[in-house]
Image 1 (cartoon, rainbow, N blue to C red):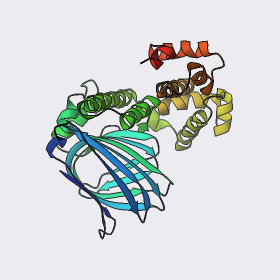
Image 2: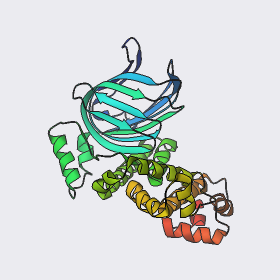
Image 3: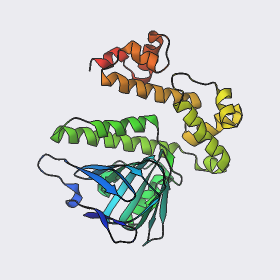
Length: 329
């Protein structure tokens, strides 16, 4: 199996990666590679690891200008795609179909070989996390309980390029945390494979769960301007974790009213404003506690709790274990 990236004029081969059949790695069970890139369009790095049935890639590049690449791949794959930063547009020249992703969006799609173009906008940073699964691996975990899943399964059987959700969905704090766990894991060999495979399945579960709960018709009914305001509201929340704003204050900052904010935020992100705010705070608290460099009181203060006991109660309610117990693991 092989993947190649060229400059858009095909004059320069930028990356060529060759993989064993079904991504079967060496005796350690998992293989890791890392590349540094320095081209006319930017500098950065690409990390990948793979084991039987699964390939993971993470690209992090600082762009100098809008970029257009020619991509070739002979892989049949179901891709769990996460754009962490930047915007991209990808078109398959053979089928005429395309995928477009914005910052903090995810989706799942199936391709059986690819030859086409990929365009990246001129954001200062482009970060993409991709998990490519062999169809047989993916199908083991695809439920049978929704029409969208059954339609996607049929496309797999017919080897037809397909996307699982009509709309790209928002990457949740839980998804981000799992992605960080995969990228920052210090385990090795068979133990790393076991850890990463478990996290990939957990990440897929979160994607499929969110897709199954997505109300497409409701989302389609929202005006584009209102959707943009909901994304602005999300940024307000992320920038004020330790000093939360009221619903009225957030609504005023993004140019809407409280009713539209509550209704639109739930429709776009699948959770309430305060549910999202609490998810982000708890995931950040867990990350800080596992880092072991801060006390429970310091973490409590960092994420905006004046009383450490109130923080401990909220944390245990969310994760089922107390902050002090987590730090002893």
